[in-house]
Amino acid sequence: MQTAMPTMPANPSPRSNWSGNYRYHATEFFAPRTIDELQQMVAAATHCKALGSRHSFQGIADTPGAQISLEHLREMHLDPDARQVTVEAGVTYGELAPWLHQRGFALHNLASLPHISVAGACATATHGSGLRNGNLATAVSAIEIVTADGQLRHFSRHNNADFPGSVVALGALGIVVRLTLEVQPTYEIAQTVYENLPFAALESHLVEIFSAAYSVSLFTDWQQPRGTQLWLKRKVGALAMPTPAPTFHGATLAASDRHPLPEHDPIHCTQQGNAPGPWHERLPHFRMDFTPSSGAELQSEYFVPLEDAYRAIRAIEPLSVRIAPLLFVSEFRTIAADDLWMSPCYRRPCFAIHFTWKPDWPAVQKLLPAIETALAPFGALPHWGKLFTMQPEQFLPHYPRLKDFRELTRHCDPAGKFRNGVLDRYLFAST
Ligand SMILES: Cc1cc2nc3c(=O)[nH]c(=O)nc-3n(C[C@H](O)[C@H](O)[C@H](O)COP(=O)(O)OP(=O)(O)OC[C@H]3O[C@@H](n4cnc5c(N)ncnc54)[C@H](O)[C@@H]3O)c2cc1C
Image (cartoon, rainbow, N blue to C red; front, side, top):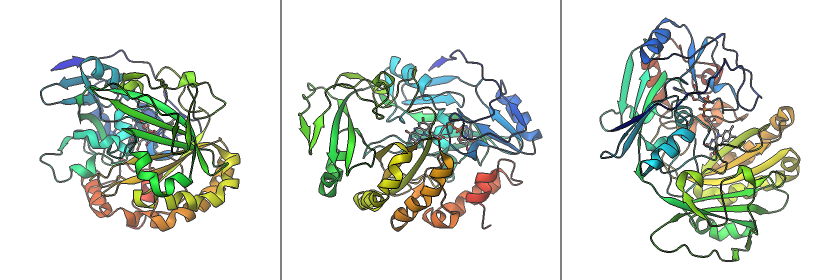
């Protein structure tokens, strides 16, 4: 077993989220230095909530009481024989991934950026892409949570029937202090970008295109019926890497590195050009030491069943004249089905349609209902960490284990200590 305690950046009481579009209402901010200290804080609090790296775009990490950051809890333990790593909840993927790689191990996937905390990402079902890749929470095999009474509870995939409700839990069960993740031998990825893939190619070849690599992302600006950039992240095997073909389903191989936002410098992005590199330096789109995405932005994302992907894209297209002026970029990704109760991919492989918006919430807020209406026939579910305007009754019926999740929440938090406006409105509205 190997252990590390990386150095810890100071984090003064944060009043806003990463994007600056949401100001927290929390009256206090604590960063306990030990789990004992955390347990005492939670037991004494009337209202509190875990705060991760603040990358969610609304009040899901907010509370009328104390926000609790686990930034001082950053230990990592690798068990190479069991192929598991246990991380404390202050650890980010940007810290974990290179640490694992140096020791010969890897995670199955990463999100578009490495800056987010493992605990916060898993709590909202954060995902990368790949037809066979579940969201990041699917790597979790055990989790330890300080519940409302200050007690430390263990949930394990192997011996706890409530485990599938404990991982994508939106901070509702308590404060996660440790997560154990399945790891695999480290691997390399080579990233290639193609430009201008006609949407028409998706009509009969969507699954073929999205299975052309280990992880595939298709970007669009909705200005024409085509994907502006197709990012293929291929796993490098024992055989020599094939030279990418000059064209792919009507798209053309990019002549140089690209940023998904054409006006941004690709230096912020992970290396392309089919150059093999460690998994954690290719799977995210953005490099740890640079600004991810645009910075001043808003995000929304909707999950539809994979089988409806093409129809869902076409359903949105008539709105493209309204979407394009407010948009930085859209991205399509795929996520494998899982068994986590509050995951949008619970028992259904998903196609995720993402929007990175310019920071104009009044205009975006007016547009979202039209997108949500267009996607309603497909049972679209919103990303828990992003912006949406759907009413709870529109999407909660698509969570078949909601009742079980509510029961588990009541068991861990009988007085609603970890509830906030988002949970009250979207999870407990009709109870
Ligand atoms: C630039 C950018 C790019 C993004 N890219 C992607 C992407 O590729 N894929 C994707 O799916 N999402 C993406 N997101 C969304 C992001 O991954 C989620 O919002 C995620 O939850 C952020 O994690 P966090 O640590 O910042 O959590 P926070 O925003 O701080 O909190 C989110 C939730 O997690 C809970 N939480 C945090 N820590 C704990 C803990 N210790 N115990 C219990 N609950 C906890 C909070 O209470 C809250 O409910 C992106 C966001 C940004 C800003």
